[in-house]
Amino acid sequence: MTNTAQTDTIQPVVGLEIHVELATETKMFCRCRNHFGDPPNTNVCPVCLGMPGVLPVMNGRAVEFAMKVGLALNCTVPGYTKWDRKNYYYPDLPKNYQISQYDLPLAQNGFLEIPLSSGETKQIRVLRAHLEEDAGKNTHDIPGCTGVDLNRAGVPLLEIVSEPDMNSVEEVMGYAKSMHRLVRWLGVSEANMQMGHMRFEPNINLHITRGGVTYKTPIVEVKNLNSFRALENAVAFEIQRQYDEWQGNPEGFVLAKLGKQNRGYDDGTCKTVFQREKEEAHDYRYLPDPDLVPVTVSDEWRQRVAGEIGELPLARRARFMADYGLNFKDADALTQDAPTGDLLDQSVAAGAEAKRCVNLLLGRGAAVANERGCAIADIGVTVEQLAELAKMMSAGDVNATAADKIFEKLLAEGGQPRAIAEKQGLLTVKDLGQVEQWVDAAIAANPQAVEEIQSGGKKQKKAFGFLTGQVMQASKGAAPPAEVQKLLQQKLG
Amino acid sequence: MSTRIDAELVRHIGKLSRIELTDEEVSAFARQLGDVLEAFGKLQELDTQNVEPMAHAVELANVLADDAPRPSLTTEEALANAPDRVENFFRVPKVIGGGA
Ligand SMILES: [Zn+2]
Image (cartoon, rainbow over all chains, first blue to last red; front, side, top):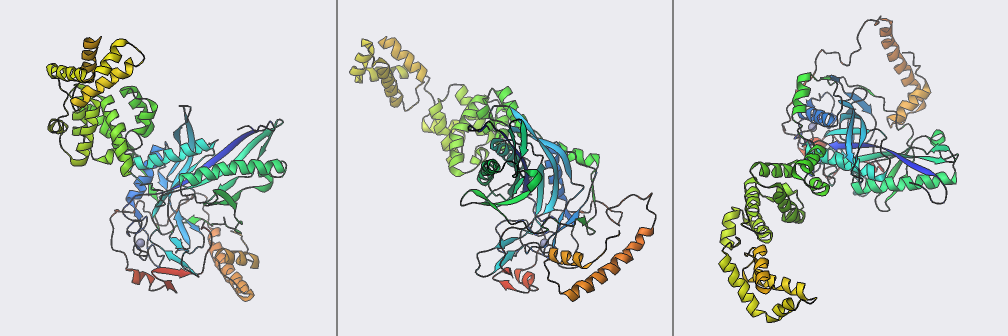
């Protein structure tokens, strides 16, 4: 980013903390349900209410989910991790401390590869990922007081902290969306933004170079962003705001003098807003939690979890481009989630041509998925149906229009593609005598079009298309278009 | 550990804990907390030069539960000990802004 008035070079420097709620059945340290949207205070017990004398027991699946994310992010998963108490006082935190991991996180020193619009990729380093418990929820819409619902208190939360390796809004969004895709891909989180399964806290500052001197603006942490849109707006706003403020005070508005600041985000104005720094807010007095024993991870355990990860999105996208000859856009669309690509892979394994399957999936399939607001894999087509339909296309048994109709029919009612084609009369007519009859009828019925074609004027092309259309209509789409055109040319040429 | 418990530190801890303390309480807690620390200070006399640091007093690791739900309390039970409630929520004074 370069300013036009001055010759300043501005490099945004952004790190991102992402909180991901894990899709376990139960909470992190008790066996209450982890379920969004239940009536207030129905999934609570003495442990997650912070009653005295209770003992938390960790959820084995949450630990494995965290390991899985760590390994997929190319992190080291150390052989020994432990639990710590992070002390602060807030009504949604019944114990007055949050169980978290301080100095020995479950995963550290990895990276996530993100796509750039240039077609290249960039590695964003991941400093650490640790497990902790979520807090409850405060309701402010009761007059005169705040209501506290502790259903969410104790839900397993994975905090993933990046290094400040992102240098533009695009890179921040690339990282956030890649992480979103990854946790869903691994099946460790639904990552539903509306349900608050994923929250962002970016750290943002600028390195501004003017006249050979580099200035660093104060680092701003924006708290609790709940959507991609909020993240994008907040980062873009901060980059502009910090540059504006710095221009007004180039020697004063700098990190060395002002340090780190917290800001909130206003959804209404899409701006970040100043937050009064809570006195001593960061004095969390971490201490090892005596209620919980450490976690030791053996090589066997680590290898078993690593073995469950399978092919990751970027690797699969590259394979689809190399093996199936797909362009970037199509390959990317088919790797938004794991099951959609599985459907393609399995159909190809069943003998279908990849390109035909892709056209079906990204044509009618994507349209239906979009209407229903689901993934392409969830529209209800089976491997058998997709493979059979694709094979019928390759064999010339149905044309593209007919295939679309069959696809739609089988999504609505189920059934075998060939049976549907036969019943609906959608099979391509290979009987050339029949096709010739349709062609002759069209020629006889449209003397003006015939005249236009034979006179060779500028209307020729349009008239030819019209006649072809007439034949296709007469055949109810069952005539092979290439044969129709060939016959028309022979008869009128 | 040679941290001195003085009035200022007690007020700081009080503020972190969101509790108001009278001057009398501050001096009483300073004395009591000082005594506690002094008792623990005894441990400092032990020679731990060749002892591995440990996170837990029990030689156990990986106490993991199955991820299978068990019954929670009823909402009435959950709210029974609450000083105050509103509908099925715990009722607290109006708070503004986010947590940590
Ligand atoms: Zn519970």
